[in-house]
Image (cartoon, rainbow, N blue to C red; front, side):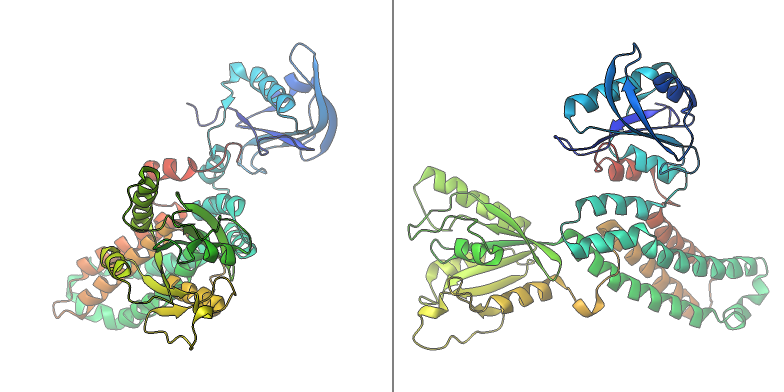
Length: 450
């Protein structure tokens, strides 16, 4: 498929709406525009026009906007038709656009292809392109602000600053490699060690911010696990502030997982209520229990709910022994309101009353602490796992470069190689050094029309 052929798609969400948008992008859309409207359009002006098929049938009427390259979202010519938001109407307008550009190679756009073309045409870097999808998917005000900050280039600016400083150091050391007799003087002459230390310190600060950005974007997968009737569904409802799960005194009421997303300080938490863990001959309940263990294996955090009125239960001990050893577990003792004396929590334990709401603020704070969220160090932008991994790789290479700088023989070629690898890791974030496979994976997660 030609990367310059016209692509077209419905750019608004599926379903009915007051306004719907059909978007077309291509290297040169002037001929396609003339076929659709029998006239030229003034770039960057709104034209109120009838939208017709090629045989003259009136399909709709609305606003046509024409953006000439490179002054457009994709960096190519872009035509946007804003009409009524009925699915049938939009499909007919889209078909008309494709028919008008058929001999020009026009085709339906793939997911994220408009943004991919914007990236390939240097309208934005890869981190900014990913922020487009993050802004669309943002589930909280904090996440939306972070995505907008990434889209405006704040994160990329930090990455590019580090990259430029590494390039400068590389330039000095690689120029020196042509004069091996001066190797011993290089580190002192150009203050390579303090420069490297400052780079590493700034990179570590960026990593700390990126961790916050990942938490803000990805959230936390929290699984409520425990015996039947310890209050898992009641706790889900209390955290969600709504009657999401059915609560009854009958053991085994919850047969399958119930998932609810909540936000604590803007951080998304995906809370999963599960079937009570016990021995049972009920076939349906057994399937639910098997699914519970599957969810437990996937969890970022496990809340092991227990009945505060019956601590030290043998089945709870069996559940504890089977929980994944590498997953953080918080023991939550529910129904403390039924105790005759005050509940005393041990290390890694909390006492709550899901019914009365007691202890829920402490539970929310504990979840944020386990997630590594630090409100005082909130990231001003969103980040993805791949960004964090790239930053950590770069930090590792800078650390190795520092080790080479401390060696008696001072092997500058190895020092230079570690700087190059650190620079490549940072460049992969913005897309200056990125494989086509990674691009395909990133943009395939976008919605069609964006």
